[in-house]
Picture 1 (cartoon, rainbow, N blue to C red):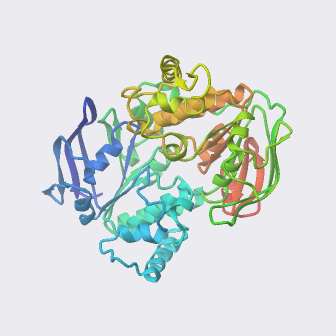
Picture 2: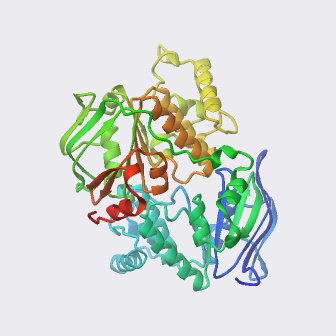
Length: 505
């Protein structure tokens, strides 16, 4: 361990109106170490990092680099200091290619991009760090997981000396995650400061050198990783809420009748290539059926096809025996299918709309929420208040834009809306990705409760911890093929991880 911190944030306080986001926070960071930052959504982690990056200006406090006070006035100052971060919500331009987005982040970007040179650099970094991505692809064609890889590659291309990574292993198999942390360790060994934001306790203890926990905008605990335990970290993150320490894994009460059947379904991606080939499986009432696999292996296309948002090129989809292949999204909704998409702010919610407006997006034409084309505000407000109470949604006011809520509370609002329509099938794509322990626990228990009421949940995730905690069966996707379908109670992490890597087992 280093004796003196290379980067210090001292007494950082940040207010947004009446909200105190950071309250006298101090953080010491050392070259050659990986520093884990934990805390619930809304605990102040992102705000603190955005102050370091010049996105926000602190109301009080100081930042020191190598003992000298620095002022980070804007993101350009941070970039010049070689500070960089992969945010939860990516900073990419959808209409540009991967290479063009990365080029824009470089120090010297000419008007004309040397495409060959840039593609070569991206390819070398992709291969070195096992982050596969097509440099020529448009960002809008990529899955959320693939977009995250682009953001990580941007930092590597810029040779950032302070690297802030928010859940960098979220789109990796267990085997690939191990390689990623070897890479982060190599970066630290070369003298970089690595700040690693995660909600996986075991992952933090295995890979961090130091850990700081934020709660309610303040530093709740700080420790060397060797002194950490899951119980200590969990108590620091959620306080006295002991219920989250209890395992949530519980077996299905019973499996009901077959609800949905896919037969030899093939689906193309946005490039016109087959993303999912000849997939066949059945879903049953009262079960959680997980789809495991690294992002970009057909999960998004499958979810969108089942939601009626993407056409299939061949095969059939039957819901309760009725053929709904290539019917409209409205038809799928009427059949009882709800959709929790992987990107809550781009596909699930309208960030500029307030809580009430987002709450009735699926039912704003129906009684009692509207009549003769006019919105019934009292009924809408009553529904929103019910969501807030039943799902413990924290907010600054139901009339404020949803974008001002934390990620966990945005997700709760989305889940509340999709469950309110009494679905038979819930497609949940990465429903707890990037959420803190408390919010993830809440969402998982909601889905388990729905299962116990006879609803079928299609649960898409790359996180094997999540899959083994909540699912009854798991299908593994690799390169658009179903490698196998296993009962969760009859398999293990290693077997599923090898299937995710394309290995026959």
